Amino acid sequence: MLRLKTAVIGTGFVGRVHVEAIRRLGDVELAAIADQDDDLAHRFALQLGVDRSYGDYRRLLDDPEIRAVHICVPNSLHYEIAKAAIQAGKGVLCEKPLAASVAEATDLVALAARHKVVNATSYNLRYYPLVQHMRRLVATGEIGDILAVQGTYSQDWLFYETDYNWRLEPEAGGKSRAMADIGSHWCDMVEYVTGSRISSLCAELQTFHATRKKPKKPIETYAGKLLQPQDYVDVPIHTEDFGAILLRLGDRARGALTINQVAAGRKNRLLLEIYGTKRGLTWDGENPNQLWIGRRDGNNELMIKDPSLLEAQARPYADLPGGHAEGYGDTFKQLFRRFYAAIRNPSEPAEVPSFTAGLRQLQLIDAVLDSSGKKSWVTT
View 1: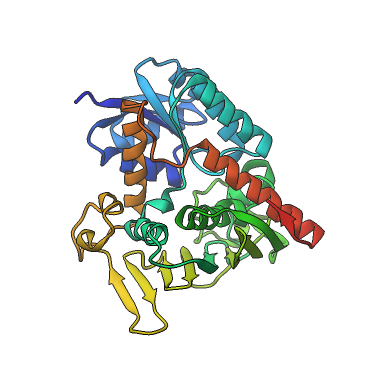
View 2 (view 1 turned 60 degrees about the horizontal axis):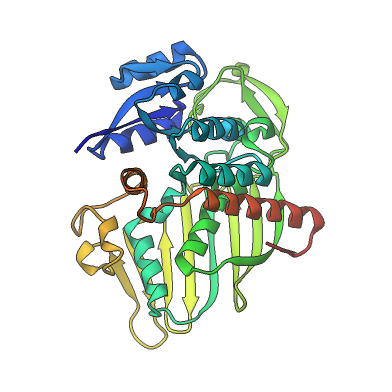
């Protein structure tokens, strides 16, 4: 099979994750790297053994051999790069949030449709095998009618005032931080798993560190824990550390979500609970190979990921046998596999969260900001 050639734009934390997942596919070749300057791109490419590197992504887009690009740069740059890539006829897989605004995302959705290019937003957490299993349990009626959903997405990587990242700055990360960065993952998952849309919500956001200490030199995501006092400068913070959100899911179901980036000890916990008229389900992203299944009359069950026990349509999302854990990196591999399958066979439905999914989450982000500002319910 002819190997498709692709490129990664951005060399930070998530760019490295994309590179590793691409190389696990087998039928896709990482042909080029791009970043903000030639030296940075060249050093990253040298580490990875990639022949071509560019300090300007536009030069990369001129390469006719490149069939697709992965956009892994700060949020404020997503729109301009995605737009240029679409116009160059490349498939585009963009990290979330898709753009800085609903208007930009709407434009990208229309542009991708007009140019007929394969497109995806990186809501990779859909691709855990047991998340796929949950989705099938809901779809087949095993859970009954959904009454309530609840959960959290909690992290501690911004716990201290000395913890800093470009996502804290609206100019680079956007007007929302916790909701855009992690809350959108939870909302995407709950709508994907249940098949119902969040119809309205009521949110309160809070910034606990009104001032943070910004390092005087650039640092990568999840890094910077060993800097000294003289390495910082004080800056005001205008994006949220925490959010509490009540929601209505469809006509009947109700729910509650907390998003928290100052949760001591929680490294990266997406917790989703779904309660129906027959059973309950709980999945914890810090223990992604276990699924709790609750019953009122009968024993509860702790299901361990095993392809032979999964619903048939969820089975292709698990590559390893029972007792062999699949984790965060595997979700990217599963997403990318389906993204490139769509590029090879554009006439087949793409099993990926398209730009439409990215637009949807930006609409929910706006609704959360609007609700918190008004202190009232808003429709979505």
